Image (tube, rainbow, N blue to C red; front, side, top):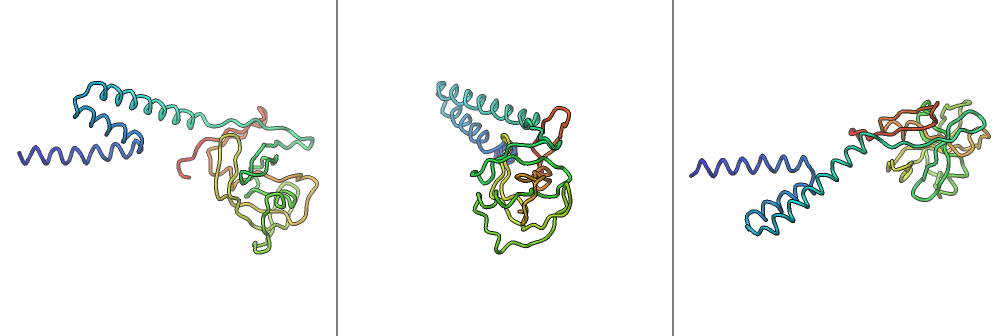
Length: 198
């Protein structure tokens, strides 16, 4: 009898690890199904099975979408740059140049004012992008959203002096590096796939 209890105990631990790996929702569904089976009420068992099947399907769909990634159409400008529509801090819509050579997201002073960013306590420095060095102030953005891809607490820089070539700003590696990304210049699109490391 002790052996049976120990076996059940270890089986329970093993199942709890499996359920944790699947996620809280699926684990909850499996627990509900186990309880329904214990009750012996067929309508509860059927309902619990259907709920588990639905949630497993949703989970698989989510994984499939993450593997496929998000495709963002880009707009060419008259200087040969590709622009992406972005939403910053869930507040300001703008278009940023997609530049894999830029280490950070770079915003012009006008966008910073629209966002209400306080630069008085920001560290100042220089960033070299596109057409030279720019004096900037370092900031952290609450969020950046492009298509369905979103990041929170993103490092960025604000240009102290506006530049005609950089109309609104640049979408640089402080955003792009958090994804597995492909910049398709010929197809004028950016493909972002979730990076499990972030």
